[in-house]
Image 1 (spheres, one colour):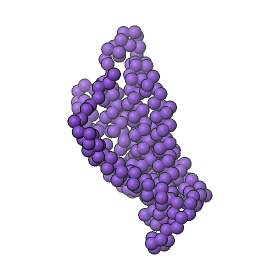
Image 2 (image 1 turned 180 degrees about the horizontal axis):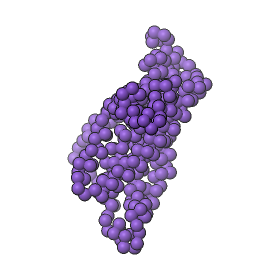
Image 3 (image 1 turned 90 degrees about the vertical axis):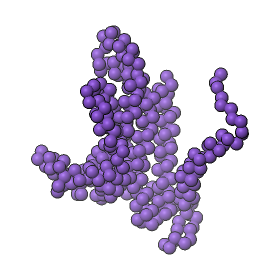
Image 4 (image 1 turned 135 degrees about the vertical axis):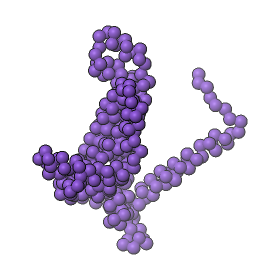
Length: 293
């Protein structure tokens, strides 16, 4: 039997929910509805008249080789960013959980990148990897690699990947550190008494207890890699060279705001939204089982 909160006035719960419902309606439901409507329409060159075209915008996308290239680039980019950001954040959190002297400063420095806007994070790494004056590009040339993200698509993709991972590590570190500090020390001490080494204790005792936190971060990092990396791409490579770093969210922007193809941009946003929703449902259906076990 669970405790229930009772209000004297029936309208009070709805008044308390109203601000959040209003935000959801204005910033999610209404834009999503507009995108779905515009995805089945085509505007004239002046933006004064729209014509219903059905699924023509979607069919045109599936015939576009550049869009399909962006699709595969986004999938690979999202997998690498999610896995690398999670593993790096977990590693740093494990170190932060053991550091004694200067631990507060260590934790604060690792949290700072999360406070940086994605565009600023992209600009920082852009200057460090600049082929002419970047310090990292200088050392790469010293080791025999001529870094140039202006001309080489693989270098540009690596640049936005590194910047995106660096931006998200602080977020993952914060949650993993909180999760590690909530693990009962008695369980770890019992495993140590049984003869388990540090690595075995971590993977057999600590990490299974961190799975609820890990599951939450998998969902959040997936959404981040699909949507919030727009600022990184826009500040570093502008989708180039030769569309090598044009991920789906950036292609929505280029199609709609630069190409002025509102219908095509809306169709792309609907596909991207459907992908993220499907991925989230999959994660909750299959990965969430380990949380409840």
